[in-house]
Length: 169
Image: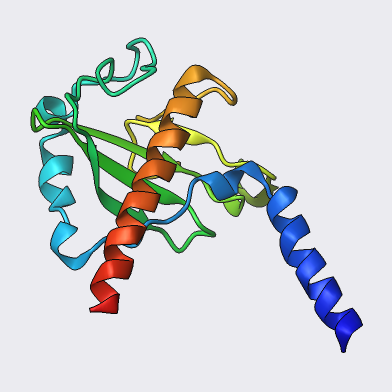
């Protein structure tokens, strides 16, 4: 029994140490009162989303047109294998949307379905889903990717603490 427990513990620790980078883009369970009307934002993207495809990739929220403090106001999990959409809102009422792709999914390529498997997730700026052609692929290990990953992780931690406190009541 001790051997089994040891290997279970070893598996848990090693899976965190050797986890794939896509684990850095978690789904964030939003508090009930934090839900945002993302349909309104989708319909008004031209005026509410200052960063546009073709612009220089932002290295912070100010460069993306959002004034601090910036908060994650919506997170959507898609049932396509794990892609997520994230909606950030700045104090100036402007938004930034980005999404991640799932680590494994099927897609239609030249009229046949192919399975794409990756040990990482790409981020797409200006898109609600990775299949949206309007999205801009963020280069891996770029300053923009690092800024977005930190923003997602920081907000995930902040919101998780709020949710935990609410459920403890």
